[in-house]
Image (cartoon, rainbow, N blue to C red):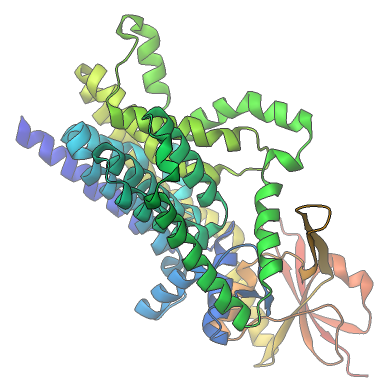
Length: 489
């Protein structure tokens, strides 16, 4: 019986690895993936690794760590192909499950630790979106956040305050250099909630805590010193990170949007965690005599982490589903504990569901992904356009996206910066252009005679004296972008 279980789990593990790692280049980059790739490629082509750029202009939305990782993977494999861009993210998800297993065994036992990893990787959202479009930042941030929270819990149990603060702030630093302020907020809320529950709030004023803060501040300050030395505007970068966070929070939304989001948010989370989110709810509903559950400390603390931190996203209508990935490992641990400890007699049904989810992903890889790729095909457009260019350079032509960043700290202390950035485009186009030519796709707002430009259809009424050389069609057969050449006379 034991050997049969071992074989089953080995088959599941191998099948998940096959499902996750054999479809990384089936279709084009999409969502935020190509933008992450383009910023990394501009770093590599320009040899400028401190100040990120997009279309040759400073890119302020995210710190550079994830782009450094993409460059490192390019250097390792010698390619910018889709599978190289997606590999760090899918590796991060897999390592989250692996580290979860090894860190939880001593607290919850082999079976719960193993199932928490399987459940995490087979949440519907993670299996059919997060691990598919893994070239985004959030899978990597999920790994860092899990380690960050576990370190706080683990060393809180042993009361090793130095390692608790030093390691958690080091991981918070990595998180900040990946996505900015969210990791700082997670660090602050989690420390407060955990220490409050453990009746150790006084440790927030300990020398060990100040050492942790110093690790964070010294590392971030060192980066921004180099950023300023490289010609970057530290104030603009900082203001933009604050602006990025506030745009996705309740601060920038009306009350109706906030109230509506608060009402639907629990159902959204349940939907993202399907099918596993329904099992405990249904099983508990039909077995109310099992309530209330008694949770071991690790499960209880992870539940406190979710409750303490998810409130930020609960009241933020602009937050994307991917922002919630950082909570998925902890939901998986709680669900695994409930299912294994209180409904172990149904383990064969859980095994059947797990294998069904993995098989569905394999079917998706083989039959659905190739169909989705056929509907887009931007690479074919770039091949046709490059044949027309015959080695000439291409430039992105569009209106400027200009806005003002400001922060008022007091009546006498405020900061303000005017920012001009390129208007958003489908970044899969510059991704393919840069991958095929090794050239950066620069940006201009005023066309120059004789030059080649790629421009959105909506911009043509603002210019004249050009020849249309090629049209980029979307999957609806609508014109999106045009390759034009300005007339020489």
